[in-house]
Amino acid sequence: MQLDRLKTFIDNVGLVVRSTDDEHEITARVAERLSALLATGYRLPPEATRSSPERHLTYPLYIAPDDSWSLASVVWDMGQQTKVHSHETWGVAGIYAGVEHEVRYLKPAAATASAPLTPAGETRWSPGQVTVCCTTDDDVHAVTAVGSEPTIGIHVYGGNIGTIRRRSYDPATGETEWFVSGWDSAEDVSRARASR
Image (cartoon, rainbow, N blue to C red; front, top):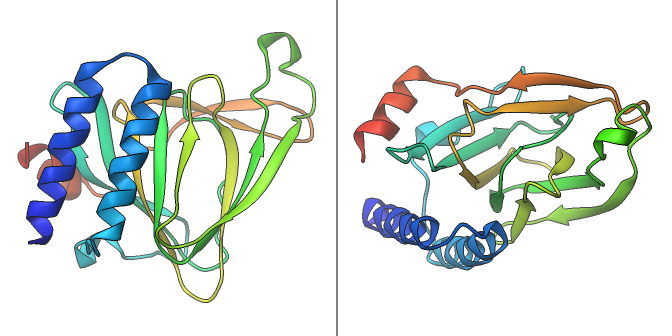
């Protein structure tokens, strides 16, 4: 039953991604589908919900054969937070468990790359809530797991998020460093690719 729900979701997102190049339309339609998946009581496999005391983990659930999009479970232990970072693509995130505190920033223009980042708001996201976390013109934020249990998100991204070159920012200065997040288990990547 759980695998059927996930397969249906993957098929539906694949249809959306193939139907348009407009990332605002894609994210709106994917957000509807992710909200519906969470509302069904879908349960992630236990191995995709494990936290680590060292850092947050990103487990691939599906990677499209052409790398046009990917689906991941992202797990933060209590109190863990990300650096301020970009995605360089579109993305939709739904909270599966725990509570996420998000701080958004305006994406700096190239001309202001060495200036402090401008805060653009804060939100707490709870189980079942879904947000368009990024489009290429608006994709800079930091998140923290708050509350008394690990925070788990189901994330859908344009492209293979584990291989995309992205930026981390010093919000006080605007200085950037490039990084590639990777995936947290080669075995999980193999399984995600094999499930195609």
